[in-house]
Image (cartoon, rainbow, N blue to C red; front, side, top):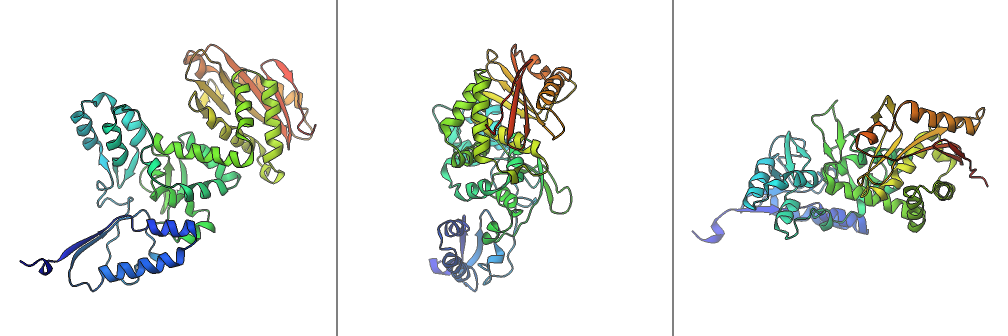
Length: 399
């Protein structure tokens, strides 16, 4: 049979990548027009076409790039159809590890590249798994992240205000946040509607759903794995880098690790004055300080397990740093707001008393950590006071 008498299959992968590039680089209208003509010419009224398959991150139907097409069947990662076609299933990954005689590395591979939940199926990132098993070192790395531009992600995440930074902090603690998910996104609306951020992150692979919708289009969202967590940590670092010099932040955190609380306070005071506004403090200043300090602790994530608002002993501590090396000191931080009628000394004393009475150090003690640095941070607006263990050290950000 002559070649031209056979119908063909047209496969278009990552059709929306040019849209992302156009959006990021200022030629968005031109690329939308081009894609509309390309798809219409290839997939509509084409007598040689048997099937057309288009894949991409986002369904951007409202951009009218599909206006020349009809009878499209659209399937997203929220649906069961084709849910195993987005990556490797657990069974496939186990077979691959067996073929390379590295089945014992299952936990490591799962921690770094597992975690996606597509239409009820647990899925691994195929690109990263293949690169991992093919490498000589077999050292886990962010293979997939290093192949993609995160410019849009960085812009969306770092432009947000206090609430967004708090939610990023929750995600970094492996907590879930509940957000609406929209399957149709207009790229321009990303600049206008903050609620579209979560849909973009989900369909781009930077978040996962924990299961079915909790209500209509509301889903619980989490960071899927360690590879993606690297992106959020780097975004937080870049946000701080735009505000303060990185060496200043590193000096402050080194002082904290070394137990030099006076230097830690002095550097923290400088940072608070530099990047925090009274508008940020709003009606819940304790959350603001909490989110600020938690974000800065990202620099220590390679040496400490960082947790916040977790149960330990008889209550819930604000912030805990559990060292990977038991020879290091653990750190417990309690935040307190000082109201007009209160004295800072009393608030700090109560905060330290709370750490002791509620036994917030129980989790560290169970982990075999022998030394624990207990820190109380009290504040009123931009005024800041710190107390350590039973010795009181007072500072004032106004001076």
